[in-house]
Image 1 (cartoon, rainbow, N blue to C red):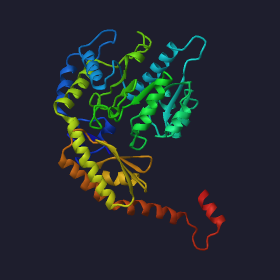
Image 2 (tube, helix red, strand yellow):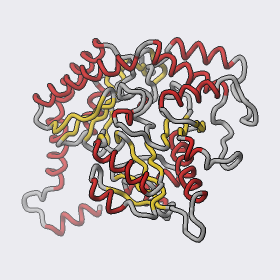
Image 3 (cartoon, helix red, strand yellow):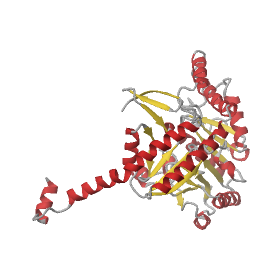
Image 4 (cartoon, rainbow, N blue to C red):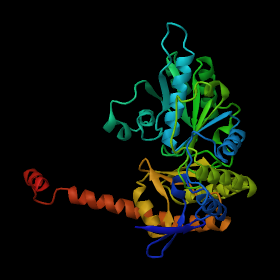
Length: 409
C-alpha cells in the first residue's frame, strides 16, 4: 500500500481510496494533514533559509524555546532531531550533573531506572532503558547501569532506587507499552526519591506530551514537576524535531560545547514548530482534545459492553487504547480494509492517536466503523487459529514419524 497525500484527518492511497487516520503518523500529525498554517510557514521559510549553522542564532530558536519553557514550567531548551536523540541528551545531562556534583573520592551516580514495558528509542542509550528484550538483545552489550522497575509498583521502586541511581526515566503514559498511565502515588514517590538522592526525574513525553492528553504536558496532572523532559513527535507538525527541556539546576551541567547537534533547531523547522504551538493556543485545541477524547472514550466503553473480548479501555485525551483478550493484528488488518488506520502494541492492545483537529462527526464515523470491524474480529482471529490447529493436528491413521518427516519436508 502506498499513501500519496492527506487532508485534514484523512489519508489517500495511490488508488484514490480514503482512510480515516486514527494513528496520526504515530502521534506525529497532531494537526492532521496539509494544515494551512503549517503549509504557509513551510513555503515562506523554504524561500529564506532551510538551514543555518548552530554557531549563530536564527529568528525562531529563541521564541520557540521561550514558548516551550512557558508551557512546561522549565528553564532551558536543547533542540534535537528526534525523540531518541532527546533521550540521549537527557541521559547525558543527568550523567554530567552527577559527575559535576559527585563528592571528592566518591563515584558519580551512574545508575538509571526505567519502567517495565518502557520504550524510549533505538539508539544505544535509549534502547538500554527500553524494556522489551526484542529491542535490546540483538545489540547487547548495551550501556551499563540500567535497571527496570515494575510499573506503578512503589515498593519495587523504593527497593531499587538506591544511592547509585542518577536518574529515573518515566513515560507519563506508556505508548508502545500499552497506553498505561503512571499513577499519582508512583509519580510522587519517584519525585521524592529523586530529590532525596539528588537524581534526575526525567519525563519522556515524546508521545504523550504537547497537548495529547488535553494538557500541555501529561505530567501536569501531578502537583510536582520533573527535572528534565523530552519531547518530539508532533513538535514540528511532521518535520523531524525534538527537544530536551530542563530546570536550571540540571541544565547548568551542560557547558558550551559539551553536547551539540548539526541539524537540531534549524530556522525552517523551528518556525514550523512555533506555528504548531501557536495554532494549538489560537484554535483552543486543548479543549478540543479533552472534549473529543471524552466522546471517543465513552464510545469505546460502549463497544466494551458489546464485545466480551475487550478487557479494558485505557488512556486520556487522544491517547487511548483497547486491551483485548484476543490477537490484535487481524483487527488492524480488517480496519485497514474498512478504511481505518490504527495499530496494535503488545500483540493485543489497539492504539488510537488521532489528530487534535478531529470533530465529533469523525469520532462517530470512527466508532461506527470500528464496531463493524470488531464484529468480525472473533471470527477472523479464531478461524485463523483453528485452521492452523487443524493443519497441525495428526490426521487419521498418520503416525508420529510420518508427521515428523512431513514437517521436515
